[in-house]
Length: 189
Image 1 (cartoon, rainbow, N blue to C red):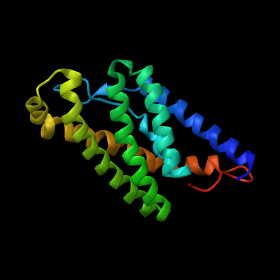
Image 2 (image 1 turned 120 degrees about the horizontal axis):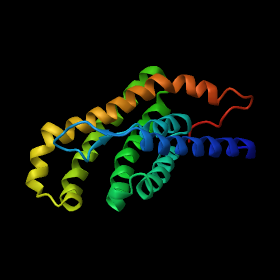
Image 3 (image 1 turned 45 degrees about the horizontal axis):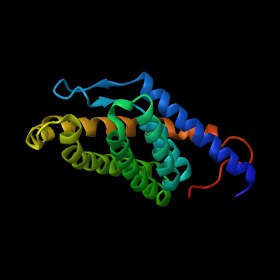
Image 4 (image 1 turned 30 degrees about the vertical axis):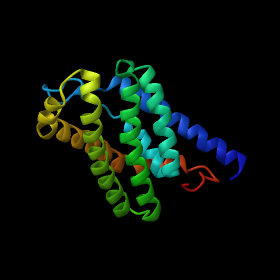
């Protein structure tokens, strides 16, 4: 990879990171009154775009950087638990969806990758909510289990699904824009 391509890739990833932080800072709202701490935000969309542009390794790196910045600034109240939960959930999405899309680089492949990512992210968040919500919120595990079907699973499906749908709709135009200059960007890794 040429130095100029590396610079463009890192610059694009930095811009996606910044966009992710701005999005979570300005757009976040609860979806379920029973769980006001579970807020929708579109911060994963730039990470999903970066994953499709540069591959699962880059997606995981974006997830790590965004999780740390978000968890120490705009979402600081969730602390290390929020950082870990975000990294594990979005990281699992990036690894799976990125690998699927790298192998099947078509619109259909993107749909399969995003759908698989949504299911994986929802499952990972169900597990992490069972483990960490009792610690973070001081709630008994039974209370978390009682919220699993009516709140936790639907919330995570809606959040991941909405972000995946938006990614699907905006990825191609953004990818064309990013790759427009001669020399373009390097292939996904």
